[in-house]
Amino acid sequence: MVGVLNHSDWITFSRPSTKENDSPQVASYMNIRLSLLCFLLYKDIFNHRNISLISFSNDNSILFLMDIYSDLSQMALKYLKNTEVIINNVLIMTEDFNICDNFWDLNYFFYSTHSNLLTDIADSSWLIIST
Image 1 (cartoon, helix red, strand yellow):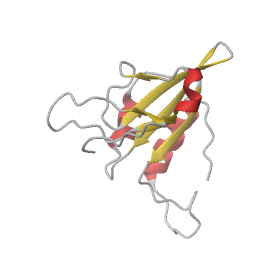
Image 2 (cartoon, rainbow, N blue to C red):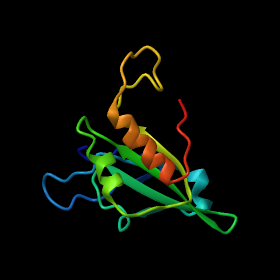
Image 3 (cartoon, rainbow, N blue to C red):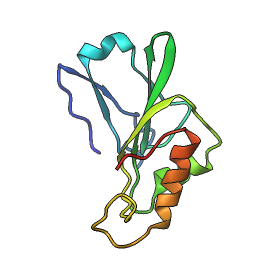
Image 4 (cartoon, rainbow, N blue to C red):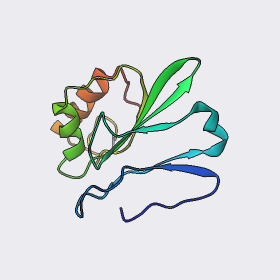
């Protein structure tokens, strides 16, 4: 990603670049009407160009949204699997995982071992994969 789009109705969250070849590949947008939820980008839990972790407050609880871009080599998923951080209050994990598998696409006739990795990560955060 080279820069992010900005619009007056949206709050943009993306990790800053730390070096030339480390530009973030994910950006998250929250509508300004949701500002009372106090969104905050966490850069200290996951420090990866392909992962964005955003917290928000709701009824005195802190919840998280995780935005992931996993390239064809599954770098972000491998990073998450190898990172010893478990966040139990992730509400949703979204993005492009680049995993073709017959588990969620009946038109695809093959099984991918990367789908196990994604399922393990989702399970560790008590998430259910929605197809």
